[in-house]
Picture 1 (cartoon, rainbow, N blue to C red):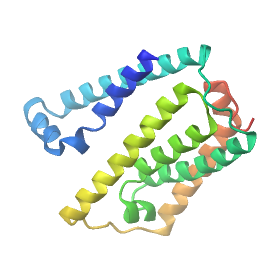
Picture 2: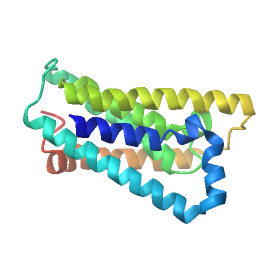
Picture 3: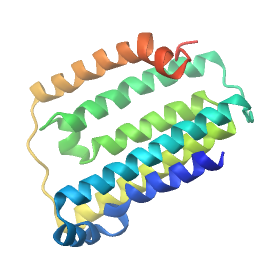
Length: 192
């Protein structure tokens, strides 16, 4: 459990620099350069993800159960994940309507992903992992949106053709994850 928590703390701290200290990144970019900044960011991200994965795997060996969600909740979570993947596609594809309207579709994708996994998993490790990422993404989204309104950030143009690309990305990735990848990588089918 400690490894999971340490990984989450590192991950959230590294990914909250822009939220907590928006000018700090630019200041360090001037001193160290883009390559060093990205190298450090990637190394800390990989380290934190490795700690999270290893810590989560260890907690799955002897889980502390808080609740046992009914099977129907897993099916609802799978549908929420489809929306999360559309948000992810909207973050990756330029000029999507979701990006133009909300500004941060990647954080919306993380919120929906964390919520779907939180409601369909009932162990203490699940609550710590998905709950902390849900809180982080909600807080980050609110702070970024408030900052954009304060700074008068203009919304970019969007087009339906870009939304369709995001939709196709969501459908293809959802089918791949639900029917193949989740079971192969995580060891659990999301529909059972």
